[in-house]
Image (tube, rainbow, N blue to C red; front, side):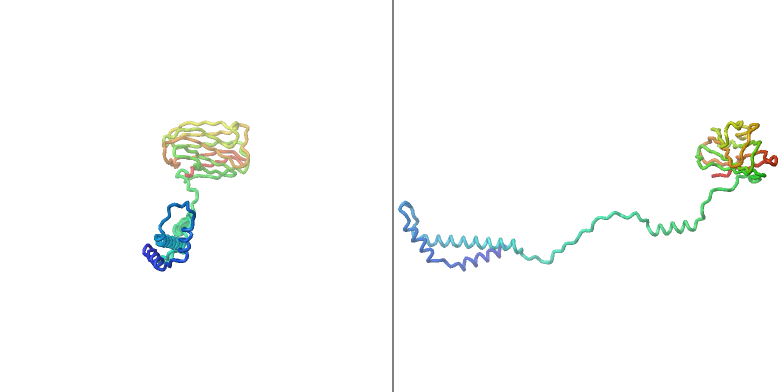
Length: 258
């Protein structure tokens, strides 16, 4: 760029043609000025000075023209500038991996459907869960934990019961300690005892004289602590003796695990 400017300046200087008539007119005006101008430059030096002034003006005009040209028309550059749009950031979608989803679906389809444990404990192998109008089922409650357990005995009777004795025996495994019991029937209708006998903790409800158990489904539940861990209910069992419209009936069995 510097060489190009120098070249153009040199060409402008060589092409400059002084205006002799204009220069002569300026000299004449200077000589006819009032006498107050005591100091005046010799006429012989006016010509070269005017030449220098004109040359400086031409240089200034040329330089300004180049500057304007540089602003309006920038010098060409090699290649073509391109603008690439930056991709906008996107949040990852929460969709699952198709392969993982497919594998999970295949595994779920191949696996058998889970169902609550319904196999009776060994003590219930020779059980009698139904007798006349009375039906029974024992199970470990789902709310039981690794240090506390509740065993539920469900009774259903198709007719009223005028006598009822319910006994639940909890094997003394895992340092069992009773923490209470409850039933869905009125508490005032029963005499309740809890005692340790031999190798079991015995809960007993006896229907008071003159009271009646209405038809329907009723629950008797026992609660106890034990050492931390999963406790087996294999040694737990129950027995129910009752009197219905057609006489005495009895059911017995064990408690299905969770």
